[in-house]
Image 1 (tube, chains in turn cyan, yellow):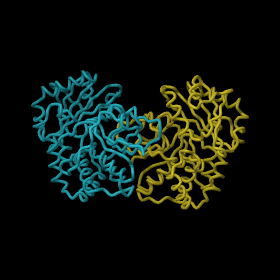
Image 2: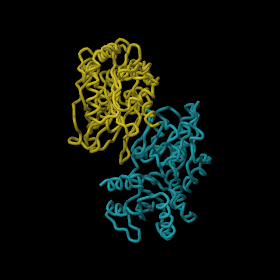
Image 3: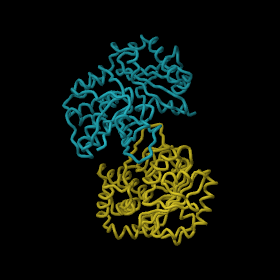
Image 4: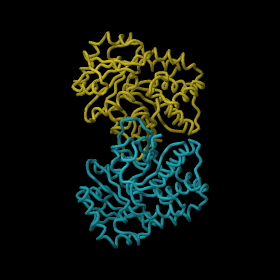
Length: 308
Length: 308
């Protein structure tokens, strides 16, 4: 049997890691030879989750073509967010909840995307449709992914399906959603021990009308915990702009208690962000009122504004 | 409620028409305001199918943005195969069984693709997953699509899932697969009354490494029924090359009784076809032994050869 590697995006978050593990479990139950791997270091929230449910982290890989010819993607599809040698392997399956872009295949494949808050909400359906039982541990991981991606159901990306899925998974995993969820989110939002590079860990690159745009996001319980280190943060953002030839680097600092964000923008195209949100950057900084979702409240509006 | 139009590709075939009707039925049962439409004239096989099950053809449209802001696509995703003003509307859902290419969205959407022989095989799953019953008439249409796309299970694109789906649909529709299937395929393969334009009706355009490639296919019971009109056929193909600026036009004439094809190729890049299949075109014509599937035996091999 052909071995498949399954992985989520670079700069992995809880949904990416837990979806890869869950997808591998589903496919193993159906007889596949598959291994979940990851493309980067775990963030502190995901480390908390894996530790809580006592699951070993997927193996870290830099490339995949040296090991396999076929891969499955979870929680992403855009080439620049995937493994560096993605063009050297065949993508046979994708399970995702993002827009589709910079993705092309020669052959038909399995592609399952739904506009829901979390990839594991879709995966739970797939377990059901294939009549595969979700184990207690995997249910815990899948629930954690939903809590993470929907900010405990507060994000505008959260759908009724995510809420229903979370209830079912919480029952199987035997955890209390509210208390576990807040503990988990706070573990991720504790920035006190983070290096500057770790503050910018959850960064994704997008191509918007031929502009290279990097958008990083961090969840905090007090934006000043990050803003107090602004000089260092901006230095690293600037370094990234130079290294990657970016046109815009936007860093979204999201307060998970108030559900508002502050944006820091650097690059030649910061005016696009100003136009998109009707704000003015003062010392590279502007409030982004009510913005908590990169996917729903940042990427589409910037894509549209760049396209003008 | 926002009205949605659902449609398959240009130059519609049986799967495209029947999938649009079936998808609309499924969504209507779930309360949606949706209408199936078509982007071109019915071929003789599809006309036979709709007549047999006494279903009215979907309304013909040239554009969609003048009517709706949201659309669903079945049986295709590539922009150049879709409605001309596809860029002016939002694609909220896709159900397909082809490769993904030239497709990009700003927002997350519902996308369901599986590497099976026919779109209605996937749609049958969706009826089940949503616990919507398939009516006798719609089952007949869905079965016809599977018979058409798999050449009565003879095509290499045909999977076990297609066969199982066809059995279930035949039961609901109360038809005998073999006798109905041959009658239907022969209705489509009767080229005696077809104009030259109708011989080339099932044409799809592809972008392969920046080359514009048109691939048409016709099913026949005797290739000489088409080859005897080669001069006219080639004249129309040449006209198309000029009008659309094509680099290659390949016409695949498939014998549904022997499961072989003959190819006619015109354009500046015919050498790519020769390299792909290890054949030589003599008077623009070459045998394509064992080739019956454009999707599985033509598009991927030409894509790869163009990429060399």
